[in-house]
Image 1: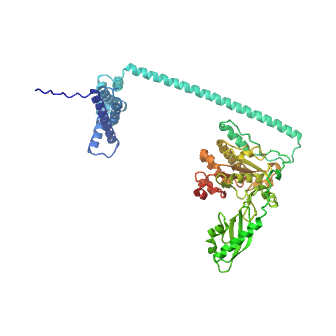
Image 2: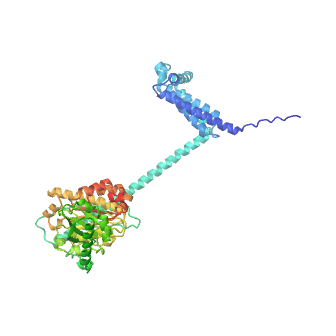
Image 3: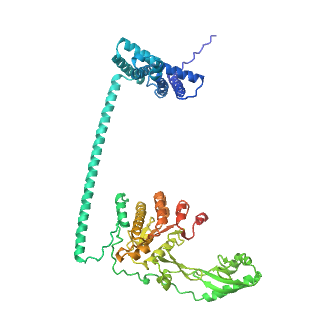
Length: 596
């Protein structure tokens, strides 16, 4: 029985060809890298020194072409499978190396010093010297250049493996395309230059028209009014002009609304009438059974303390709108810490949500027990500002805060703060505090005395004030415009400092006391309803502007009021927090935000 011997199936020649290309490419690239390191490194081993010295003697400057050609060949073999001929590319690289040594020798070494030792390293080494010597001896120097040029072209043809006609066609096409791109670029530059010149001419013509209009209006004003005894000092551009110039350079928002800014100085508001108090809601009458409730809680408080062995008497009551403070006087020999530890027991006995023990009350020899009222009373703005204390306050920036635990009205002066940071979650009273601050100033100051810049990215709260005469510009709702407004406020601050320097005063009060009525500067209150929205879209610019205003704007009468419902560290950064010391804290969503 004969057995058939199966012949092994031949390996696919395509796989072998591809594998050879990859192996040869990796070997050539690695060899080129090793040779390059040997040539460029001073400290080599025996093999590296020998290889470097051999290549420098044989090829001179062409020694550096060896590693570059080897790495180029390796790259071509790796990525040029079925695109380059193995044999042609290899011979082309060898020929290109020979022509490179010839060019290095003929361009750098005179023929009479062809084989001198110093010329070998400076030129193309022995290889380049032999090539140049043979051609020059047989023909002449011009023939050397011609032969080297022809050999270079042949080497390139072998490496790229393309016909000469294709290379020439592609080269000419590249030159033509480059020339066309250059022409197109020149036309574009020319058109842009013409457009710029036209725009400059239009702006220049517009300025001339404005100057003629101002000159004619000045002439009419001089003809109608007598000349003053003393010429008023010339004023530099104010904040509003800076805002207009800045917004003219910035792109408009999506709805293409441009800000129409009202003038500051020079605006004549004749016979401004303060808003009447009848616009505000009247306070509700106090509950009728309040005295009976207070007496009952006094009895429960004293009885509870007596049950724990603490002799105490309630000597005074401070009944506020939401909290009532009972001033407790302890019997001799009783420690204050004993009553402090009974806060939870007192809350349970009084059926209160919480009880706060203030031990002792500052300035008094008594302990305060603060208990929430059963029926909290809403404090209206009218009852706080309809007082002689508010009307007679010396500062124009005095605003109402509310009532304290002792039912006393509380006010604050924004000029002394001089900037305010308000933090609180939704429905915590933050927006009501802002409205109270703005309304308090509106009831005290005219548009010539105080100006507002309101930034409301939420488009909810401050939009109600749009249109009041105290506004320097309409309520800003776009973040880009808000950043521009803050930059313009910095310009206005610097302008005011220049005025103070020329007048020789230190602050806005000193300046207003020296100049006439028409030259007085108004206070500027910048109100930002939600800082988090600005920080999310323009954090760097907004933070820089706010910090600069907070640091320098106090003396110029520019004050910041910033509110946010998320007082985290990424919104209220350390720099902002360090420069705004006055804060009003409402309830926030987390303990971490409360500490911020």
